Image (cartoon, rainbow, N blue to C red; front, side, top):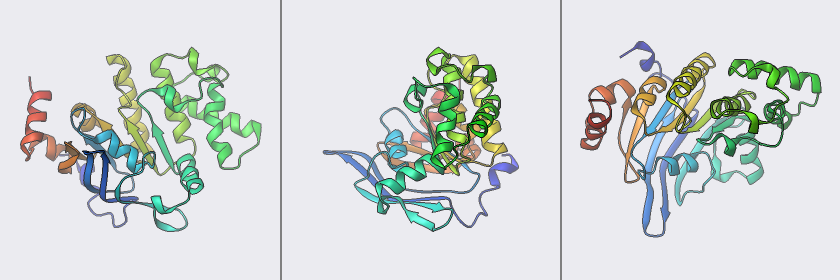
Length: 267
């Protein structure tokens, strides 16, 4: 276990606290009584098979879906810990545009496909009140370079980009406001292996370099090992195991986690 995975056991104040979170679809329980915390600078992976409830959990925590029960509390910059679903819709939208980011599996869901790459990045800055065209363009150029998109593509439409470039553009769009919490839903799924590896390296560099807090949903345990300090394992809507990533993957305790690890990480 590397020393970095222990760095979050002594943080006093979580940036996100989830308790008793439950979401049903009729008689089917998608998420049941989920509880966890995310600390400043920590990357938390949520893993499990398809249908385990991990994407529903992410959508509830990020306020894209309203849970049937439970609390989602976020540490705001000026008001301390606030219960997200007690806020007004406009307050939640403002947090989503500024202090949060959401990287979708399909980049098209997180981009405006009919405006330029630069405008995609600058749009979130405008939500914070920036209006100076030169400053917006400089910020866009800076972030395009950070995510390895050639600055000469700033006026090109995302529709002209490859899948990997669109995903990197979506990342730049989300990070330009220096958010304090990023949600990622299978951000490398569906990409070619070489493109996936490059994107994972970029995500690791950005999350650690910027000390970002993040929740990443993935079915790929290798992705979790590379990016996450801690992980939650979900089965049938419930969190069945949680712990430091290396501990969970190297010494899984729950039978379901043992099955996942043995089927994915071993030949």
